[in-house]
Image 1: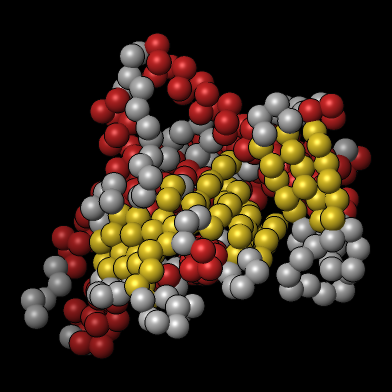
Image 2: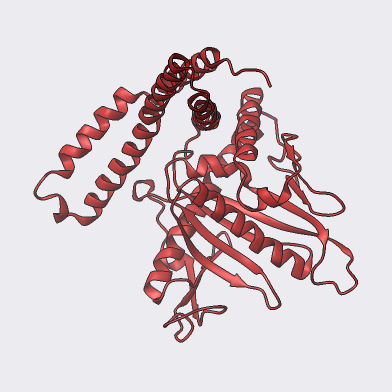
Length: 371
């Protein structure tokens, strides 16, 4: 096995981080954080609870962004010191440990580099993700549940907090639909490339003849609404139904009419929420997700209008953007980027960063070509 060229690798990491730092603009971030800290220290901050929550939330978000870059530069410095020590002491164990850290840093820096490509209007927002079963009967419902687990495991691997807002269970197995939030900056920009139709090919565990089954599930990703967006929905445009929650539950979840179905009459957009204990909580969550979907719908309509004026109308996504094949061989392939791996089990366990990175690069390249 060829020896690792630490000097070249570390130089490349520093060059990449210089680009990341320039795009991130740490000085600007630090200035914004200092301003928010001054606001947060005001004795009357919590006289206006909504404003206070905005200040503390934004301060937490900017600190997270700052620390991601600053900490990475410190880790590169620590790696350089480790390599120097290993060489001076001729310590193979230390150099082996440095090689492992180098591999970890490569992946982490690549993630930060991809983040610099997220410069869309809503890319920095948190995300609301909805998964719906499609064609394929019970296998599709089971596939929807597999995708929910995949995304929640991905978030867990990256220490991203999530909140499942709604789960609608299918009769035999799996899910009709599920909605969850990913509560970190740039979650929308990151996960937006996951939107589309996902396809599963496997031997159906629900078929007593052991036949191969193809099933589909749809993934929708929208930016989380913020109070500054001013997406106001008149009560006259809403149809609200309440009903008893279904599926696994506990305490008061399944014993009262706490679930809420909210329909936006002009667009026909429907949102259901049932995972909170009270009707008031479910109603608030439903309104927040409905506003987020209407915000994205507005953006899509504006994009479509611009493309029509330019004489360039074409669909953004195909009917199928990724295939998960479990039989007769193991493979997951993204049909847009061409990225594929042979370990379907690892992907379904949340190892999807490489697919997301390839998707972001593909999307950015397409936007450049169309601009």
